[in-house]
Image 1 (spheres, rainbow, N blue to C red):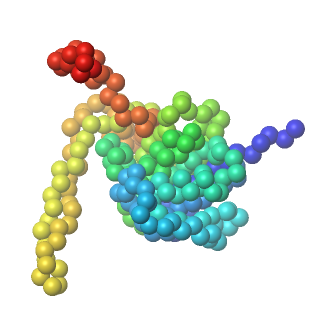
Image 2 (image 1 turned 30 degrees about the vertical axis):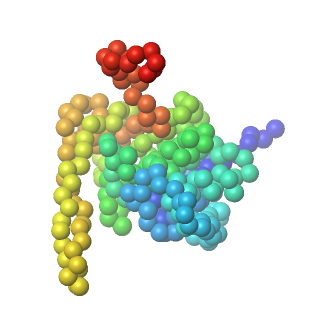
Length: 262
């Protein structure tokens, strides 16, 4: 009896024409039957936004040879939701998102459309990975990122992931020969120090343009930031359960809550 072919959903936040999406498709080509659902325009920084007040459009495109592909008018999370409800006749065995142009390490995971698509897949019970390359250039070299995307995707297809867990994978801007390997690590504690630049448009109306500086306060050598700065691919197991479990006993033990309030 022949083994069932894996079904792989591919998505991103940079849009259906992004080079990183094509690189990711090539990375998983041959690992199973691929279905692509990606935004019809860039959706970076959208986080886990979903479309609720506008119609969604799903249009089949002939963008990738031999691959069933669609562009969606919504967000990355919308892409995964629509794919599951309207396109997948059976649950996918894997969802891969990316390869993003730019880092999604540390706190960036919160804002990332790439990772939010993977989170949505994980919520739906699909093993999921978000891939990002530390290079914002549209013409970035994705060869190393594609190489590691294939390796990590194969591992997930073969061995799976713990329930309600997905992977946030970032690849340094290095050639394959200069990457030292893969580090499974934790998310570094870091933050953005925002600076909104006040400007005027041609009509003299004021507007603001977001700028900022990324601050890494975490000096641990077990973090994604350390791994990336030292030439490793970082793999951070991530979850969508945002409960701060360690805070529950603290609040119960320290807050003045009577039985009726509880």
